[in-house]
Image (cartoon, rainbow, N blue to C red):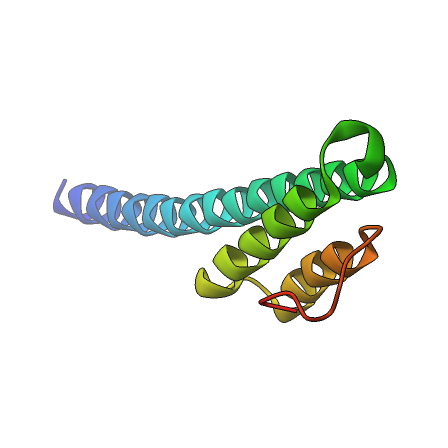
Length: 106
């Protein structure tokens, strides 16, 4: 009887180890999903901004769009976003018709 209790105890400890490992995997997967969701949102914002830049004359004043894009890029930089993303936003600001390099943040 003692041998079967020992075997059962070993099996239960093995199950606890397996469940613990799976919980760690689930946490890691959730973090990866969160990062992917943030990345997808950033891509959508970038495309939206790009298309607004293309039609800036019909949507708003060029200076307002430039200022908005510069503010977004400053915030992205402060939040530690990837340098490529910040550079992309800054490039969008420079693409706005009538943009001048003398503007702050350029």
